[in-house]
Amino acid sequence: MANHDALPLVVLTEQFASLPGIGMKSAARLAYHVMSMDAADVEAFAQALLNAKKTVHYCECCENLTDQALCPICDDPSRDRSTVCVVETPKDISAFERTGEYKGVYHVLHGLISPMKGVMPDDLRIRSLLRRVQEGGIREVIMATNPTVEGDATAAYISQLIKPLGVSVTRLAFGLPVGGMLEYADEVTLYKALENRNEM
Image (tube, rainbow, N blue to C red; front, top):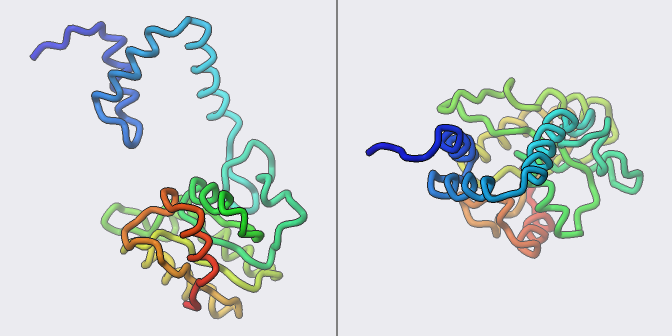
């Protein structure tokens, strides 16, 4: 069936559809919405995308996303640097911070080990985590990867690397559903999982 939309609109729709969680119908709706916006609003939207891409980078310490040398959490002197919570993505940090209970710092892996998807340990931010542990001052590393096959495998792999360094490695106690995603967990469930974490 022929597409009767103008080519630039088709290209815009395809760009929206390339984003995770956006199907073709949602992408088309977003593209048509952009067409209804004022030119100044579209320019501001495009500028926000470009500005974020140009200025946001990885934190020198924890690999979180930031526009400074250190992210606000690493830069906060009140945080407990002896406890490091290891997460898959920056979105997971936001989930923990919503609980208001965790006072330690984080480390973002930016993925999980998944040979089937071609993601190996060297593709993740594991080396920088090991450097942090080797520098001293860390007593506990909390593995807060999602309760999936990849999440469990990644947690076990990192645990094997860190335990010989004399640091306690714990895993979240999952009152979280197996196969569930941390970013969708409510604050109470996450807090309880954090509070009842287990030694690995």
